[in-house]
Length: 205
Image 1 (cartoon, rainbow, N blue to C red):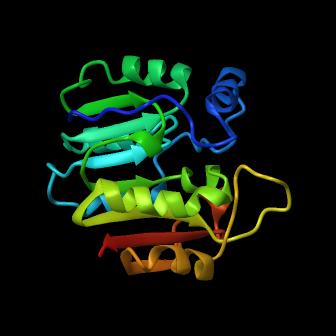
Image 2 (spheres, one colour; image 1 turned 90 degrees about the vertical axis):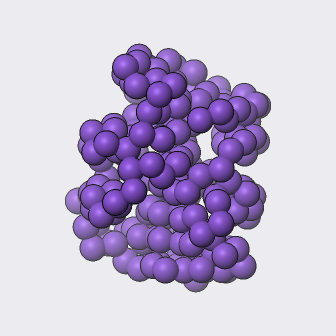
């Protein structure tokens, strides 16, 4: 797990913005537990050696669950120094062994992954960066690798983040680079997000 990245942000929602959110506890996106749809997906993975990435990881209950289930090649990345410091303490026993915790900008990340888990990262990016997100996922994923997770299927009344969208918009973004295995209304969302999410399982073309 020898990945590296720059700490320079690519958005106006910059490093200081997200650091302030964590410093002040303005983390309304945090569900306090592993996302039910991602838990269900993780439970059916047989290969525990997959190289797995979680970008914009937050408190990353998903990474914690992966380690509990015996996965041994997990990488998480976030731009907030405070959060990353806390995660490195949290995962100290496995740090550099089964999990790699990176502070920095996702768009500068290097490496190859078999699976990327998407949980509230895409919606935190300004919409103008969505095509760049797709290109970066295409770069980071190994041939046949998967991008799996959740995207909002709604438009928010207030300016983001989070930023919403629709299935039609997402299909236009991803289809040139991914085969859509699944992009459908999520049946087991967290109660606060019920009816407002699409579950995606996209395979790199």
